[in-house]
Image (cartoon, rainbow, N blue to C red; front, top):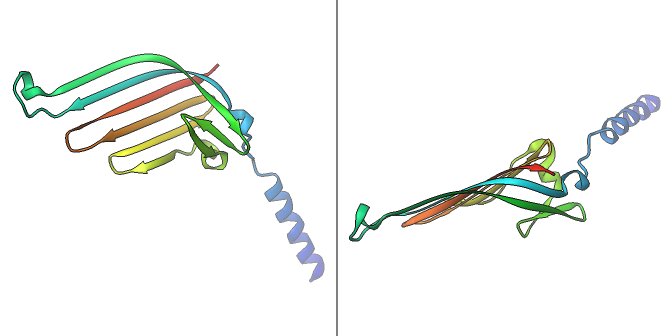
Amino acid sequence: MIKKNIGIILICFFVFSSCKKVKVKKYSGVYDCQVNYHYYEIGSGPGPNNGAISIDSSYTEKVEIIRNGKSIQIFNWIIPVDSLKKGNLYRLGGGSNYSEIKIQNDSLHCFFKGGGLGGGSSTHYDGIKL
């Protein structure tokens, strides 16, 4: 009975210690991102489209991810690395105001959305680690 329990404990130890652990260093660095920005306001006044506004813009931007202990810092957020294991989507906020971040295979994907009754905006980052 004791030998069986010791065997089970050893097997569990080897299984848990060999689990793939994500290293903060793997994510840290600079990413070259293509950014797509969209902004809109619902019109309720005079002028074309009753004053409605819509803006679309695309540009490139370098985004840096910094090591911060067992977390990463990106866009002034501190995110635990365990939240990003195996390409998980990390989400902050809810409703019509939220942000999503995913890092997988040296790629960075971020989506920010904010809005209210009269309009809103969204920004989408797609980047490759340099």
